[in-house]
Amino acid sequence: MRVAGIDCGTNSIRLLIADVIEDEDGDVRLLDIAREMRIVRLGQGVDATGNLAPEALERTFAAVDEYAALIGAHGAQHVRFVATSATRDAGNRAEFMDGVRDRLGVEPEVIEGSEEAELSFAGAVSVRPPADGEDILVVDLGGGSTEFVVGNAQGVRGAISINMGCVRYSERFLTDDPPTAEQVAAAEAEANHQLDTVFAALPIQDVDRVVGVAGTITTVTAHVLDLHSYQPEAIDGSELPVGVIEAAASEFLSFSRRRREQLPYMHPGRVDVIAAGSLIYRTILLRVAEATGNRVRTAVASEHDILDGIALGLAGH
Image (cartoon, rainbow, N blue to C red; front, side, top):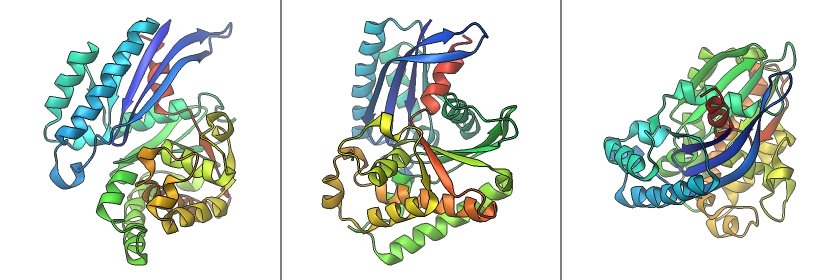
């Protein structure tokens, strides 16, 4: 069976077309046919205005047109379109929903953060499932929100979504180029305030492994690995010490926009939000290390995320 999943977030819209393969033991895996990503910045200004900007809708609809053509060309039998943080927050989301429906022929779903977290967990652990007795924290750091989900081999233990993301924090806090020390301190203080809610809701103290997904985290990993281009195969599964990630975040915060533009693995659409994203990620990891008594000293980057979770869900269509 061939399926297609679309994840439309605050910063990017992504497509996965895959064949669902079931082995003799009944285990299901995905064989990628196509993975595409467009930076459309759907959440442009949503934090301030409460609405999706006309130019952001135009960019997103252009990407949906491209994806509809690819889905048709590859003959996907089942399609699911999932929209997340920016669309949840928008007062004019009906205009967005109508535009997607007209172009794609399926009903777009604006999912709640809890479902987003569960899909992210399913995707993130699809290639390397939890070992017996191992608790994993999956962190899906998006443009408008970040999802946290703790789970193990038996399933999800708890999940929460908070309004903390690289686009939201760039627009709200890091407005200078490069950001000032005062702006960085304000962003960190708010991130820690938001994380108080996360750590009260989830059993972070039990976590044995952290898996980070989405563009901020994979770009930070590319920076640490000093890649000459964006190479998913080199990034996927890379395990880095928390201290190294903290140092990389500090570098992004000190770089000017021009310096970030020159990095060979940096997508143009992430140039102005990577500093905020990496600040959020380092703050999360430092808090996790503290909560676990420094038992968790590393984090794994995964190229498998909510898209894989969406596609795997379609396997049971």
